[in-house]
Length: 235
Image 1 (cartoon, helix red, strand yellow):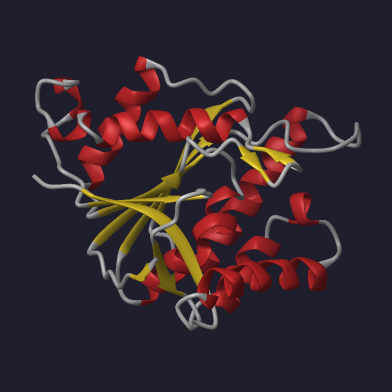
Image 2 (cartoon, one colour):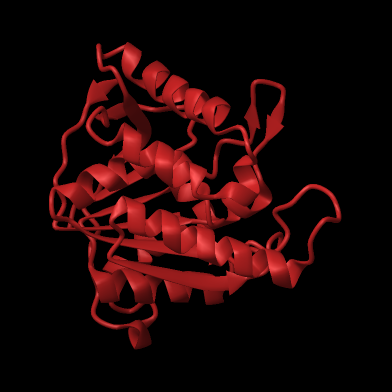
């Protein structure tokens, strides 16, 4: 593992659910936004099924989570949020999704793209990575490499664009970590903005977020970090 310092002009984060980006990479996103990066967040799902118990309806939950998403994005400093409105649980690495992601990448033209590592399925014998996360990750990989960079793929989606860095979170094979000590407080606030997911235990959630960031930074002597599997792509 090595420390990585990037200051992208434009960055894009592509995740499945409204809270995923903040949990996975909220510190890095807040850091880059504070440094002047134009930051675009793509959320594939509508958030309509992310609740335990029958206390709400899909339509109501969708509205609540959209409001939480915008609040968190404002806290982070996101320039624009793009919601693709795929119903929770229905994401597939389809031609349609790949074309949409290619169009967004070519339109925004990011230097760096953040997203979930689709190869990570099981975590510590206690968690199975959500299918939406895995399918989003595969679609993103296929959209970034090679489709967005090659003009004969989806020519109707605009001029080809080569992403320079791909950083994958939620990975079993992290090889870089980014120092987020200056932005960890913003990350905590953004995660807590997703109240429908975090509940009323703000202190407990804060401890978990800080604890994971401390663990990610420990090997490099950083107080707080976010770790990624990195791919440096060449044009």
